[in-house]
Image (cartoon, rainbow, N blue to C red):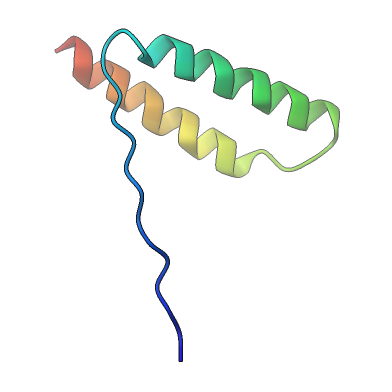
Length: 57
């Protein structure tokens, strides 16, 4: 029997978005230095940039 993973949601407001983006970029750079794949991190960054664009509107 398979169990579905629980979905988790993160609430981000205007004052926090730049902080989250900066932290994700630092983590991405560390992964690159360790020669680990960064495709998942890139997807997360794209989502954060879309959220940032929506928050400005």
